[in-house]
Length: 203
Image (cartoon, rainbow, N blue to C red; front, side, top):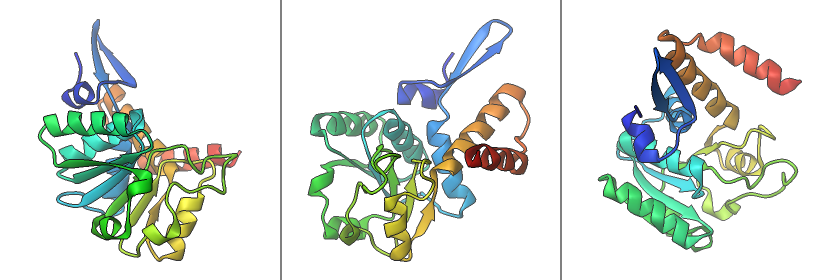
C-alpha cells in the first residue's frame, strides 16, 4: 500500500513492513518542506521555483503543492519540465514550466522561494551555479539540496544578496527524521540526529 503522496510522486524511498503488509513512502519532499517549516518559511500561496526535473524535483514539487505553494518548474529539458508540470497540474496545483535560460528578472521578482534540485554546484563542479547573480534578489529564500559542498556557489551568491539560505544537509536530516517516525511510530530525536549528521559530514 502506498501513501497518497508517494503515489502522486511516482517513486518511493522508504518501506515499512506491517506484519507482511508493505507500506511505501517518499520522504524527499518532506525533507524540503520540513526544513522550510523549521526556518519559519510558509509555502502557502508563495511562488516556489524548483530548478530541475528529476526525481528530487518531482518530490519537491508535489510536496510543495500539497502545502499550497504555487510552482514554477525550470530545467534544461523542456519536454521533461512540461511533463512534470502537466502531472502536477493534473493533481490540481498551480504550476508553470520554463527553461532555466529563459528565466528573467521580471519572473524572478515574483518568485519567493528557490529550490535547487540539480547537481549544478556539487563537488567537484563547485564554481558553478544554476542561476546567475542578477536573477537572485534579497527577498528570495534560497534552498540548495546539494550538500557537498555544504555552502554551494548558489548559496554564496544568495548570501551576498542578503537572502535567507538553507543548506542541503537539512534535507538529509528531515528525511531521516520522517523515516524514523515511519519505522518506529515515535517522534524523531531531531537534535541528536542533527549532531550525528554534522559529525558524519565533518569526517
